[in-house]
Length: 259
Ligand code: FPP
Image (cartoon, rainbow, N blue to C red; front, side):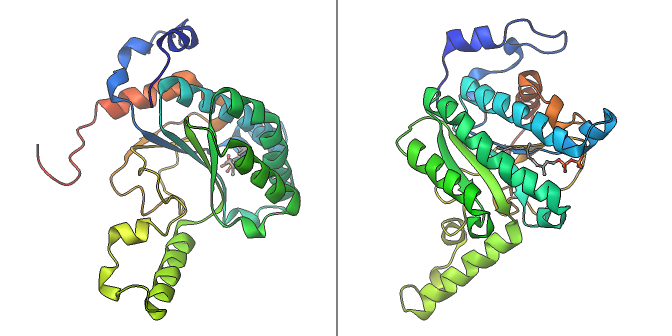
């Protein structure tokens, strides 16, 4: 997507000891970075705070991650904000998260305008409270013309449900005589996922040290590089993103072939 050299230098001034902008090759940044933002609850509990305060702090981290991703020139930043399994959390926490999604989105619209960011949602939005759905639609409408980075928010998202939905849609097309069963290949499935048209993630970041995918982008992550950090999401900064990109650039990606 490209980046603004001057803004980037300013943004990454005052380096900590272990990392600086010079440690990454700006010609080889990942196109699509995806994040499983984990550890809000533990961050709060460790400080004697309510879990909800962890989510509020997590919003600030997400705001920084969006700006960082624009500065570094990613084409797509996607984040796992709420899974199909997260409905099992206490009602109070679910309500707070839904309210937080709505209020944050309205609050951050000026940032999306300023940075030319286009919003996108991954997941089944039908089940969300009306307040949240209406605000999401407003975000989609107001950023539809933006030509910069895509910011994809996975909300009420589950990968198995997404793949099952793609299978249903393809089966319906076959039943209607619109396509041959034999034409269903990997591209056809990709075209029926919520991520249709987006490149697959090059890099998946998971915070708080857990080593699992939690039903996130199972299809799309087939060849992605994984970066797991023990840092809790509310503590994740622009420097952590740089560390993740540096690690990504040290990998030898072969996509199943040889070099
Ligand atoms: C994981 O931490 C975090 C979530 C399930 C919610 C993520 C939401 C935010 C960061 C707020 C984002 C806001 C917007 C507008 C998208 P956890 O609660 O699972 O933490 P734990 O594993 O320590 O309990």
